[in-house]
Length: 261
Image 1 (cartoon, rainbow, N blue to C red):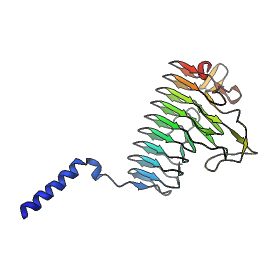
Image 2: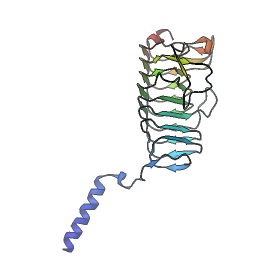
Image 3: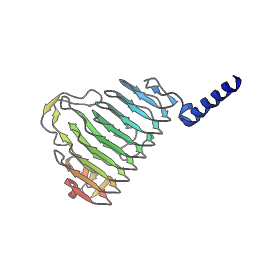
Image 4: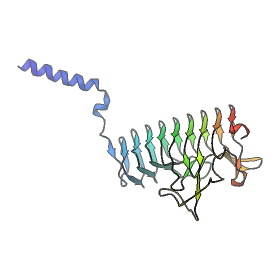
């Protein structure tokens, strides 16, 4: 009988070993607005506005309809996943053209998000968003002053204003089938997290894919090491000189709407 117990114990240890180191990892936490310091993987359910510095040793997952805002320094060693109708606010703690301390060690992947607000962040993987948005309220979708080591892909977002400005991208940029269908109805000081009242009709400033500068002078170039690909956006992707836009610096090819950008 003692031998049987020993064998069963060995079997249990073997099973633990087969599951890998994750068997001993810290349990995944639910995001708490009062959190600070180091944590394991974190899941966001509902709104979570973090004001302190946070290190997430693992993944940050935004469930459908949730909101995450990192107002302190946020470091994620793994991936960030954004669910349907969720909002991610990350970075925005450095001057224009500069990188802040916020980092994502893996990818940022959003599937039908309400919006992404990503500024002055270093992303060591890809930044990919597919679908999402709304015509019921006016939202912005700003991707500005970031370093993305992989590819930057924005497909099929529908809403108010969206734009890619003064980013440094190690791979390709692909922006396709994004549509501006609403504009602010009256004054709109900021769209995160509740949006603004919307009026029908496209925001003519939307679809900005550009460096920041003045004619003939790059203040903060948008440098793309791969190709710049733009198809099916409405309005078409543009460099908006009225909004301090300047041409992109592209090492590869400019394709589609962005051939002249």
